[in-house]
Image (tube, rainbow over all chains, first blue to last red; front, side, top):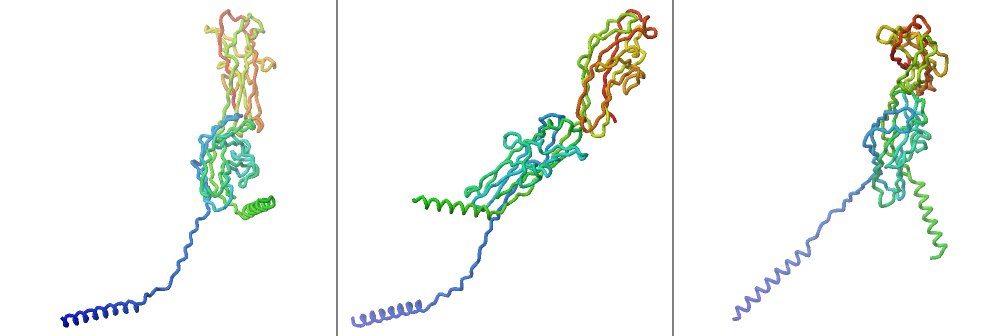
Length: 189
Length: 187
């Protein structure tokens, strides 16, 4: 009986020693961290403004002296933007480089911009007689304007343009082939 | 909130807006061209107010007026370089402007037109159309930059003179013929 008690005491002592050794080992193991290496992140979403056209040519069969000479097709201008201005206005313009000769036969006979008309999005036909940021003096018109605020800094607009040439102010325009270039351009400011 | 405070806030917002606007750079899209092609075709047309004239002839008479005047309206849209528009009246054959179909003829020299109340003139000239010595030029319009797209009218009064040559002996009958009116732009 006495021997059995002594054996129990020894076992307890050994277990206590082992536990103490384990605890002592854990306390002495140090975590090693590397230095922090920073990575700078720079993301730039550039401002953009673009105009795309559904077509790039319009033909007219003219009737001498007639006020109604519609273009062969309508053209849709889609203006898209991504801006970072708090407040801005996106304007879309149509213009010629020279109001006196929007179209010409190359022999001195011209159709002025005042006789070239655009109906924008079903509105009234309007002659290109305004001075815009682009093109010649008195050779353009503003198709439309969109106010930009926080909710539409990224957006788009469409302008469906119908064309007409009014020859009633030009009763003596000679027969011939008249060509010209109408330009569509947008500006955000 | 006091009125003064409101004014300051509004003023501050206005100043901020002005500052933002002043600092904003215009951003332009690319310029998108649309090619425009317009064709004004060249044209020259002549229309008549009527297409029939009747004559009640009196043998040997110099005055056998047509039943009606006819107005010819000539309209044109011409290319640069054209210098004249001529309007002509003519028969196909000078010897037989009108015929009874049995060998009896009224020559073009006996057929007269007074254009726009002018003198009555026989069709004895060779013109751009028709037979030799069987026509009359009603008009010659000089074309300039001012009238390359324009029109004119010619009011024609007709007469048949049966006094010349063998015409006093023209037999009774029905004489028919075709007078043509035509215009030409030159060159």
